[in-house]
Image (cartoon, rainbow, N blue to C red):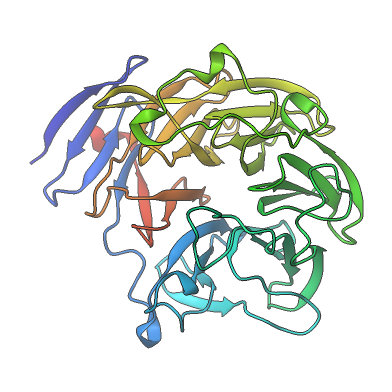
Length: 383
């Protein structure tokens, strides 16, 4: 038995299917938006009575193993859990790493994680704890560390405690959020970040500075930006007077065609660039909610697994959803999730990644503090 509830998105019609389990799935014509079903049993129970804190970063390696970063110091019960965990497809923990060690500076708060084409693990540090609502992002966490697949330290970019030189520094970072390594050039692209307002490119092997840019490919400007508001108060359309600089570059991802996608989270938009920083296009993203069309806060991006990578999956941190966008036009054509505690719903979505089969993994920070898997279903299953 299935009970279907149709929801209009303005662009297309999406059907939310409630299966016998009562878990939500997204159903749509196979040629447009895939069907996804939450796996409520994934991952398996963690060993040693471990508990996840705020789960902030996720990356999937060439073996389809799932790597996440979480913040053990965000929860008194998570303090003994290693900050970096590798899961297999079945949801078993197969490796952990992270923490202080010789030759590098382990920060006080992890952020993004990225496993490059060689299997090396990049971990960024942004923000600071204990959390102070008047100063949520300290300048201390201002670096990215690269490890080998077995956890050997290889490289540090930036320096702990030195995130104060500004967005045009060629030496220091400012609360970096995400990393992408281009296999064609061995260049590492870093979205930088909560304090700085730019993308910076370095040599992935030496850390040597290559180039950087701000929104629209311009020279970054660290002048104070108008407050964007939060929650229902953030209803104005920023596209009417587009901010000329990044507010919070929160993710950086490259498609197979070499186009670089940057989430400008607080400015509710996605900008696309060529590898050299030439601006290509942007889209201010919105999501359909009970209050109407609300600005989204794009926190992370993943590409669909078809050869053309025709779809973008985007975490909307404000509205607790995952949006599906056409990659060519950046228009929203689908969505799943809404605020809730049950499996398949989302509280504080932060990052996402796709495995080789098209399954989607979503991390949740703050109130959620969990990791969920949404399984790609064959098109015939929705008929």
